[in-house]
Every structure is written in structure tokens, then in C-alpha cells.
Image 1: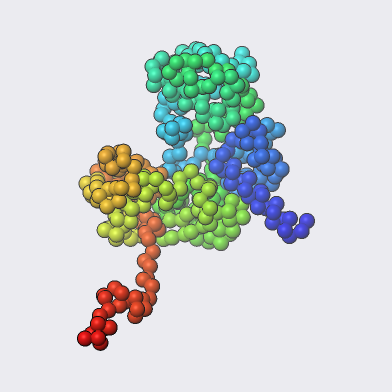
Image 2 (image 1 turned 135 degrees about the vertical axis):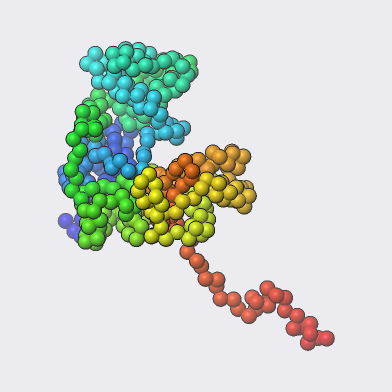
Length: 399
């Protein structure tokens, strides 16, 4: 195989790996081209994911499933989301578990009506001692769970639409992708809260860097810090070669980012009012507080890197940003600064740039990464300076 062919194969394999990280469930019905690509490189991808991150890749004729291991408890929360981008509530997760249990029942055929599935869920809930109701809220959460399975390719709307069930209980016929169902859980429920996998420091560090927007130094174990210090060059090479990620290490933490901004479910800086205000707020607070890597705040009995910012200071800065740039913001946010503050704070928390408390937030020194670089003004010619001040020398000569 020529050098060009090997490079093409490696790039094709890396693209498949990146897609699997973003979309751990791939089906022939929803993404046939990607599944074909994954199947083509299945042996190499299986070895790479197992050796690099400790993930298991299951590849079958009709689907591929990347089984990710749980992250550490201090990792940013990544909730499932509805089609309107709301995070799943505990009730929605409960329905998701009940629906999956109902679909796995031996009495369930390869097709099922929404009414029959709803009835089976209610029966299973009674058996499990779980209370479910018939309110509009309950129906919405039930439909959210169904739609998540549709998005994953476990269910397919064959006749009618799931959305009609939420308010009017309109019927819909669903196809069930049964072979995929047993692989939805990445580990047995009996393992959760029980025996914890003893991860190698190298693998644990790689996993954190691939899955988290930012890994703060204080979140690393001593062994992981040692690996980062001694093997940074090899770590950088491996993540770039396997996933196309660039490693950036700073005194306050380390980041593995995608220069194409595709391998992330949270893009920052990004578009939209919340992301825009988040960046402006971080810059404003960093300028005012002059955060340093050595700053710490005592929080719940432990020292957390960063500086404390009371909510009153956050609110005043958001009010100022609305006053200065409000015309470019969504109207709903400019009229409701409290909602804007809440969503901006949650975004920054998901990026590990702040820690939220009842009294305010702790701004992490890593936020300095997003401060704008100073730009030197271009040199100005004598003619340009005359235009600025108004050159009257010609008039003086004529007079």
C-alpha cells in the first residue's frame, strides 16, 4: 500500500472514530454510510478504543455501538436532551428505563402500537412499584423517552407519528430494532454503585481529555498528573493520531480540543446569546479580578482554584452587557436577565470554567484562556494622521 493510501486509510479510520465518540449508536437505517465506514475499520477501531480509552465497540451487520465507561463523579454532567433541547428530567429517565424494559419483554413483537407500549409501561411500572400518571407532563416525558430511542435507531416510526400521542393520544406504529436493545446499557445495572473499575492512570487521563471540555489540574489523581508530566508528548501524539485532537496544557489544566469544532457537544466560544454573553462575562470578570493560577477559594472544606464572585457582581456585569450589546441578544433574554444569568452559568459550569454555589460562582483560572489577545494598532502614515486631526497647512500657505 502506498504512503498516500495509508494516509487516506488512517484519515478515514480517524473520521469513523470521531463520529463514534459523538454518536455512540449508529444504525443502518439512520446512517448507512457511517455504519459501512465503521464496519470497514472495525478490527482496528475495536483495538484502538480498547487500548486507548478502555471502551468496547460492538459492530453488527445492522448497527454499531460504542460502549463508554462511566466518567469520574466530578466530570461535567451530560444529560440526555429532548428534541426541544431540554435536559431529561428524572421522570423522563424513569420512562426511558420502563420503555426499554417493555421492549425487551419476550411477549413484545418486532412492531408495537403506541397504545400497547403505553399499556405495557404502566403494567411494568406497577410491578416495579413505580408511580406513573396520565397528566400532560407525564405524556410529554413518555414521548421524550420514545423519541430518544427513535433518534438512537432503536425505534422507527412506521405509520403515524409519536408526537401525536403527547396531547391527543393519536396512534402510531413503531418498528423495534431488537438486536440493538441489549447493548443500550454500557454496563450491567448491578455494577452501578458496586465494584468500581480500577483504571490505569494513562487510560483514565486519556478518557477525561477526550470526553471533557477541560480537565482541571485539581481533578487529576497524582498518578494522572505524573503521566501528564512525563508522557505529554506521547499523549499528544496518540490523541491527535486517533481522534484528531490537539492537546493544550496550561498551569491550571489541560485541554484536548478539535480545531474543526465538530468533536464536541458544547462549542465555546459559540454562536447564540448564551454563548456570546458567556464569553463576554468571562472576559469582564477576568479583567476585573485579574485571576491567577495560584488563586484558591475554600469550598465545602477543600481549596478550589479560582476567585469567588458574588451573584450581585455577576448580575451587574450581565446588566451592563445587556446595556452595551443588548441589540444583538435574543429579546427574551434582554427582558429576563435572571434566565440569561442561569443559562450562562450552567454553560460555564458544563465547561468546567466555574463552580456554582448558592452565594455566587468560583471563576477558575482556566477562564484566562478565553481572554482576547491584545492587538497592536497598525502603523499610521503621516497622511492618515493628517486626516485624523485635519491638516490646514495648505490653507496657511495660501493666506
